Amino acid sequence: MVILSLVLLAPALYADDWPSFLGPQGNSISRETGLLNEWPADGPPVLWKKKVGEGYAAPAVLGQRLIFFHRKDDQEIIECIHPETGVTLWTHAYETHFVDPYGYNGGPRAAPVLTPTHCYTLGAEGVLTCVAIDSGHLHWKRDLTVDFDIPAGFFGIGSTPLVDNNKVFVMVGGHPQAGVAAFDAMTGKTLWTSVCFDDFPDAPVRIQRDRPPEKLASYSSPVLTTIHDTQHLLCFMRPGIISLDPINGKKRFAFWFRSQLHDSVNAAQPVVIGNRIFLSAAYDTGAVMLEVSPDNTSTNVVWQDEFAMENHWSTSIYRAGYIYGFSGRHEYGSDFRCIDAKNGKLIWRVPDVSSSSEDVFYGRGSAVCADGRFIILGERGTLSLADVHHKYFQEIHRIQIPEFEYPCWTAPVLSHGRLFITGCRPVGGSTRQNREEYHLICLNLSKN
Image (cartoon, rainbow, N blue to C red; front, side, top):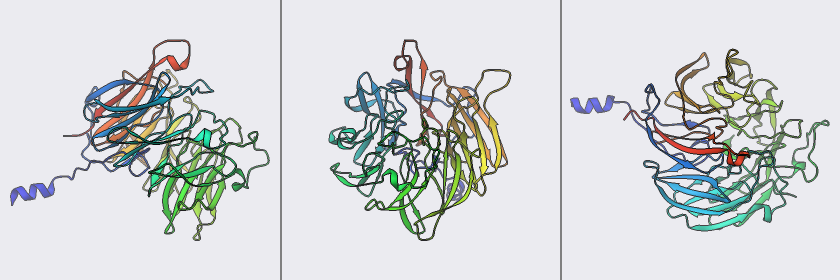
């Protein structure tokens, strides 16, 4: 009886997979428990680390397989790694010639999406691939830039697909009516296409338009959610957000929301809070909270503020009435902040740069909320454990990852007590593509 009581009183431990971008719930919130409350002086134990190719795609984890999507030389590589050991189990590669127009790296941007049987990836040049998760065998492949009329993006193609109910939803950005497409998950066959520029009728007169055909794609990823007992496919595209019926792609509502600057992007995902949707973007755009009408055909602006939150690419995290996120277009001048979800009021912010040094605190970082704490990766390789509440921000521990320097822009992944982080450091050379050495590192955050 005594033993039984001890078991019942022991804290429950929970581990989880991370099968797609931003985790199993798509919101950067992990359900894992039993994590370290404090870190050792030199940081969490390193379980393994390995040199990898370039890219900004976060890994995905399902069971005993971690899929990492990266580029080496002129190949985009889908690599299956054992998450406990770092040993490569299989690879699938294909040719790429992508060159980032702005001189950033030439690797993929979109995270893999995993199911119990398949792995789906979308490369920087628009190659959509489905391979077997147990072997890497190619099931099907679509070259979206060949199959659709897609205007060139600013930084390549980088919206992570969404897989649900035997459909693969992709923000294609094609014309004339293919801003979003649904593909059969087993065959790759196109099921439906939807969305054109005219679906967003409220463009400001002063907007700096693209030369035709207009860009439709963004770097945000589709979100599938239920509002008013109705399923919505929310796509935060370049012109703004649009809701589609996931069954047939029929438009439910749209809301124009983008910068008036031509050289701008939307990248953070929509954050759904009940029957409300929070959007944020940089480039002098800010944030807006929308409320969906009971008939699911329109939205009402609850509040809108240019300065409340300016997510560049990192999606904000909602928790208990407050929104936490990284705000700012550039590293210097950005901060981690908390705003009230009811009205967008700034509650607090953590400044980034000390006036007396060049030490950058976080910059435009990324975060995971787990076991009551935030795990934060700054863009210069700072890794922190923090106690975050709407009344305060308290950093518990901070380390500098030796292999990481600017720019560390890939979101961290937490699965089964292990934190997987990706970053780079300069190694010399004449172009950005060959000046950086990339690493994938696995840290043990589990108490056990």
